[in-house]
Image (cartoon, rainbow, N blue to C red; front, top):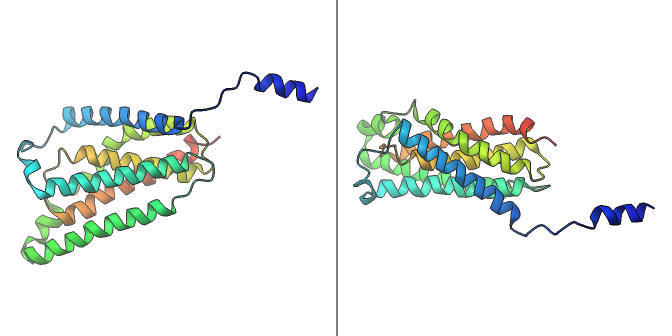
Length: 212
């Protein structure tokens, strides 16, 4: 009798496409990024020198750094959406990324001299920057969490952290199109702080939002 019942329950099941989770996760994240960009344009606006900025090395440094955060965060979120997912490789990649830009920041400080330290480290938006990043990451985080809830994360807190890392990376990438700061120490400190704050908030929310 039990075999017949199992046969009936599984008769109409169809195999899940191999890339279904990736499509769902990154599809929802893409919608969140679009919404975040719309919010940034309406709330903060693009940087006033947007037409000239791509001609500077700092623009592409910020682009690469923030995109690196988003890519590492996306891989982490995809891994943690599955049972038994790990963060070890992503943590190593994240540490290497931050250390690379941090080393660039130290080099810039040495080349520019101590009189430029305040401008390079604090800029004019240091106290606002992390809060803007967290705010712009919020719709992306919500989208990623909705996608992950339909997956099978076995560690809700760690999965929430990974979702926050993904959202923070994508959010800071969006924010970089508004930000005019040109100091690498600023980027290494305050951009990183905004992303990690989003990841920590994400861990707290994920503990409850991703619980089975």
